[in-house]
Image (cartoon, rainbow, N blue to C red; front, side):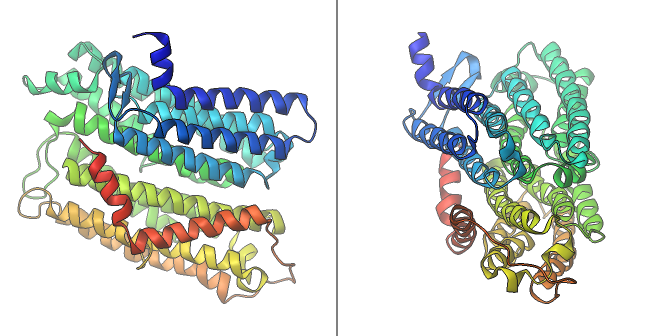
Length: 484
């Protein structure tokens, strides 16, 4: 294959790379370049989405280094759209002091997500993880006026580098015992005979590395400080874009590469494999995330612990396995990412106006900005799983698929635990709504102002959450059709 043909297949990534370099150049050479950098970054992401739509239906390069399928194209578009909304959030944040550098980091992280989504080869997956991780570490520590931002970046870096070490060590064991890093070839190797101890260690270490990335308990300790201390756009992208790509690639790893050692998490027929490991992570995440969220008085920290719980819910689809389970996981992680970007958008505007994001800063928001209060209520109720919002159908889809997996409702224990966690989450989500609509601010505060672009963005996200709840088949059917 010629380099020109390779460039055609990698056109979306190339567009984002060129955009990142242009934005960085503008930021370094032009004073007051915030708006200009945002426009260029947004245009580059829109062009990249167009380039994804121009890709062929199916193509594979170098044994899975770059794979183009309807699934990878769909989730590249989703990652690019999440990055686009993050660009809009960054316009009103303190990061606008260095817009070129910040948006360049955001675009580089987006390239990493696209490499993650579009690869079925462990080495390329690791390169995508590192490119995303290094960019997000810088984004988390970008606010030089806030010491908590530096703390968030340092903790995220330390935990992320530990996760990378686990992942790379696991990949080295897998390669050493199977002789390949291609997921399809690893799956064939595992199905040819009994699993060897070192290969089992490699699989477990790889799963532990990804548990750090998706903030699954007990590997979640970086998430609360990173979500609370990082600039709001950074926290939004860490919680949305990186989660979407991580679940896509984790699903491909376990359902393609590790498929022969699925095992069973059924309560009456437990069998060793990656399924019971993910089931244990899901159960612990649901319990820890929901119970600790009850004690929070900061909205961003509450969203961090709820993210741990939602990571546990999302793992249910992978534990269930199969096409239906993977599609349920992908649907849920997509609507969760959209919802969380919107919630962080509201948090960013309130923080800019009041100087904080504790509950007291949201008191009386309904009278200070009815639009923001209405949008936040849609996002919060969707996270709680209240119909007719997207979060309700996402949970219903996940729980029903998990309940029907296996024999004799063997995963009933996990579904019951998830329902119990959802019940707990109603309490702390309703507390946020109580603060917004019932409580009055302790001191007189001014109206929370939002520019036209912010109002349009948040309104579109809220409408998207509502539409995906009323007509979920539009996205769910597309995801199912894109799966092999």
